[in-house]
Length: 85
Image (cartoon, rainbow, N blue to C red; front, side, top):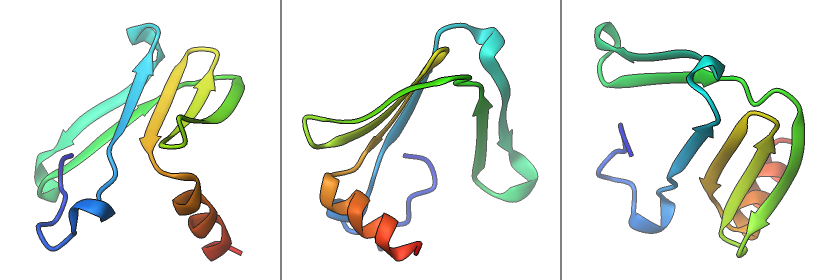
């Protein structure tokens, strides 16, 4: 994963992937050279179809134009949602 810090332990790192059906659904993809090592990826999932936990390990958000996946357990998701209240 780009930009992870070495002080973060292996159990605290989360990867992600974005899969779009067509390049036309990509809004923006930049490697921001003037901002250090930052990367920006934006696109369109359009209509949300389903949100699920695959095998209890991957949060998957399916849209009509693609899929966003984040490796995150159900417990980590619950903690993150409770922290936002």
